Image (cartoon, rainbow, N blue to C red; front, side):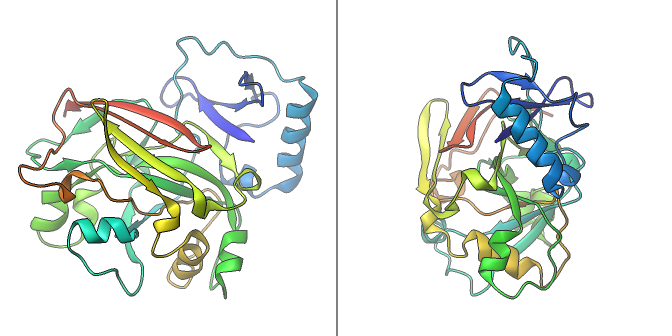
Length: 285
């Protein structure tokens, strides 16, 4: 299923995109698309049955904002330097273990919402990524297979980053990852049953119409199941938590000088096969 949340910021309601591309209202069945929904198989089954029956009310999509497809996110966990191509373009050795950072849940926005370039920024960068949404509590998992089994769904993410804040200002990566609006999510949460192999997905991103990233999740250093297993050794993952799994080559930081970092007025578009497309205009904060 393709699950969405639509409406004004803070007042989103649950929706579903059916097989014919028709937007349908889920608010009569569920209160939100969140961890509680993903963890409850019986409720998900009712939603699937309602989708198959065609009984769900149709929503007029004209002018309707699409919000982040997951509500009440507990935490957003990032994995850095997780594609061989990205490591190569910046001259870094592939890490021996996943590099982990945290993004605040309040950085999450809708797929087409405006993204704000922070005050003082000179190195705001793009990162098209596959996002994992956890569907069951995960702690101390023993295998990558167990890790994959805890995935409730997948989303498209732009892990926007400010490279000077992240790398040149000391401390952790977090200060370059947590500026407001820096985690556009969606448009849909696609349930895990529709993505039988998350390691075969094309990942693409354009800036002002120019293709910048053209990768595939097969290039990941640590695949999805291993990422979940690894993180579960250091933190408990709960339904509705989001993991952003790294970006392929083609980011601004990996380009020749002068590097084409984002400026106000730039438009970024990105997509992953099966997970939809985003479009953001960048403006000054």
